[in-house]
Image (tube, rainbow, N blue to C red; front, side, top):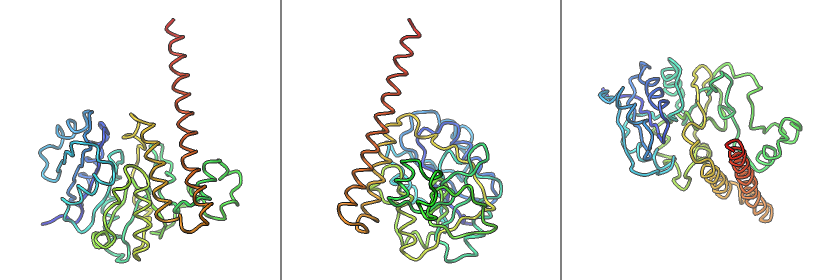
Length: 302
């Protein structure tokens, strides 16, 4: 009997978390097939996974031989999945017991749902901002950069990105965006919308997808009685400046694709300038902090 669910996991040096992630999926009774798409990891993550689950027929490991980026590595694995539902899951995300079964039941009962997410929590139990959010526009971006979202909430007129201070809905609720760490997708919708845009290397490819799904008439939902814990950033700590670069590059690509033409040309160009000015500012601060830490360490050794 073919599985109803395929779980695609892109791995890049996730360490032991990858094995824990796969274990949390295999523990669910939905009987999912798991496809790990590895972006040339150099740590022990694949060895640990094979040591514990290497003989499990439900697990397939694709070694890409290079770091293809998040979008392309997901698309590579997608070509090996045949199930009617596909869960795109981060390797640092642990699925709570029963969550997959509840998510699948919701998708089967809601034919207009093209994609759904669960409540994604931090390890301390708090809800992550990305669980339920709006598609960011330049105003939201500006408010977050200037850190005035909480000081001057009326500035965004109800379009705040962070909604974790609001009660969770009592039942499944339509949202603009969910967490990219846990995206359950209906294959029928995916075939209409198309795969992830490989023009993104890391970050914002999920936002791109959310917009395209909604443009095609599919709805995106949050299912509040299903949960996962996300150890955010486990795969992006080794090269923080590179991650920062790809994040801002993704922001620029997203703005050019979906929002550039909404504003007068001078304003749109100013937004793009602001994205890269922010990158220059943050990366400079990071470099100065690293230099200060290096100098302090040299002083201690004397």
